[in-house]
Image (tube, rainbow, N blue to C red):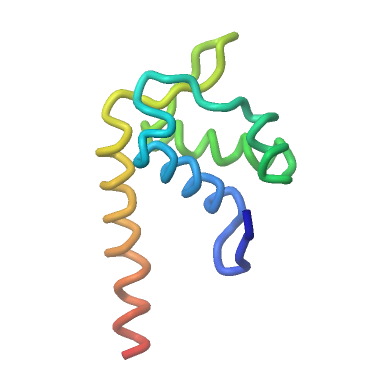
Length: 100
């Protein structure tokens, strides 16, 4: 995965996880890769991956079962779409208008 300088890495990882949920690679209720596995596959520090997981858990997209790992929450695709919509309206759209 190529990371850009425009956004923190943990948010880019969160976007990657969200994309996997939307594509049904990790459907709601299914276990997703562990923090270490995801960090290793994306070649980032596990602490950075953990920060992304914490962010997604705060957004209600992931939940943690103690001792079992992280799972995609029920309704996660809808929450991902709502999060992306809010980010577009709050960040991307104003940037577009400034550029125009």
